[in-house]
Amino acid sequence: MSKSERTDRVQAIRGEIMDALKGRNFQKAHLFFADDDTYIRKSAYLVTGRLYFEEVALQSAILTLLFQFLSDPDFKVRQTVINAAGEIGMQDFEEVRFYFDEGLKDPHHSPRNAVIGSVKKMGEVNPKPVLAWAREYLHHENKEIRREICHGIELRGRKHPEDILPLLQELQHDRTARVRNTLVHVIGQIAYKKGCLLKVLAHLKDWENPPLVDAALEEIIDVHHRYRNFAALTQAEAIEIIDAHYPDRKRKSG
Image (cartoon, rainbow, N blue to C red; front, side, top):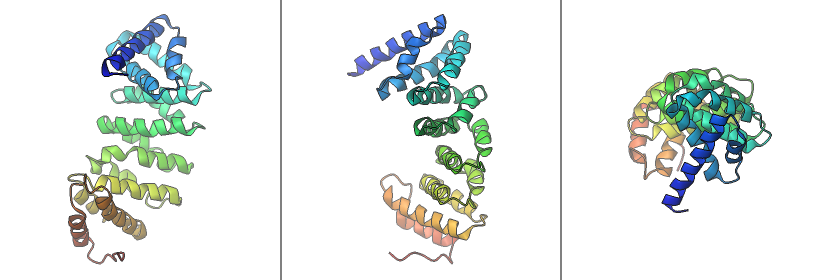
């Protein structure tokens, strides 16, 4: 579709969803939430999120719709519900936190991935309640939930590493390799951003798992090469700063 056609399509979806909400007849909205086309589903959850704030009188209907759709047998519908809740949670997290509690337990990976994406976008603009919620899951018995939370808080750390580093620190002794690998990955992802490396290195000084810190330092060095077109520093500059903070570090050959 052309840009104008996409705009017209989104407006049509908005109109259909608004009518469904006003009439409390959610079947038409369900068609968009279940559509095989990712663009249609994305338009549906973006429209739903905007309507929540633009049409206050419809908020109750929107929350009813999301609640009903959350138990839908189609994972695409549940995924779209989580994404819609993420749009709302960027301003009104407490009203929709239930959807992320439930989404983390979803048997299908797509709704769980929607939780990660939603936590990323919510945490970036509404960090206080979102990070407080995330902290509750850092030591969950399910290793995948711990991993997903670690991944989900990453985006906030790219501009404000000080906000998520204390949470990441709580995972340093996690016994699951998959969680530790995600932790190392997230540290690398925040460290190459402008103004972040020194904050990360200073915080790592207080961590109590030397092998994990070593792995994180190697990841930071490597990520400055992999993302060299986007990193705030060159790999050589990053190595120089790391060596200054960790003069006794054993560098890998090559």
